[in-house]
Image: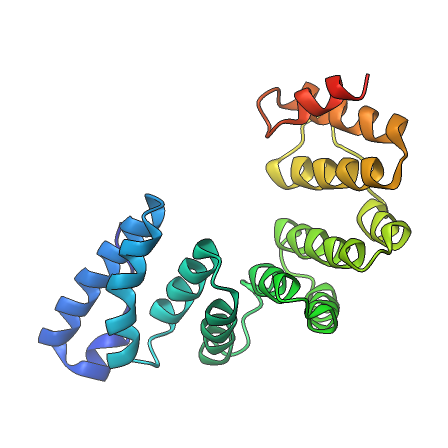
Length: 207
């Protein structure tokens, strides 16, 4: 996997840039192969040497997220946002880290900004799922269901983000004790994509 870093040469010179770019590509390959500890080992020295390299900060933030190191992930992803000129691309991941840390006000703030900016559909859906999960964590299952279920209907040919939203909504219905709704949604997801997570098993369990 190759990572394009056109600004790196101006930061460290062409020779050093070639070496760091190769290491960054190795880190991206490790990340893609779910070798997150290896990715972190490669990325930390790069970030220490070139802290303004946006691609490295983003990838290290995602790596920390996969490792469950929420505070470190927040720091790197916030740095990525600043260096990228305010990109919201990783807001759902950042919000999920804040949720894991119990910072529900931060989750709400990130969701409101993401919703206002309205980037791609899949990105908004991921943010909505995290925001709803944050409400559920606080005991507001009705609010979580209202947020995640607003205007939702599983399309005839759903994409992955539609399936993820349907699955998450079904989970909330089950937690709230609305088993018929949970069963219907899990079944719909399983019919659309039989191998999607454990939707089929959960639907069967609720029969």
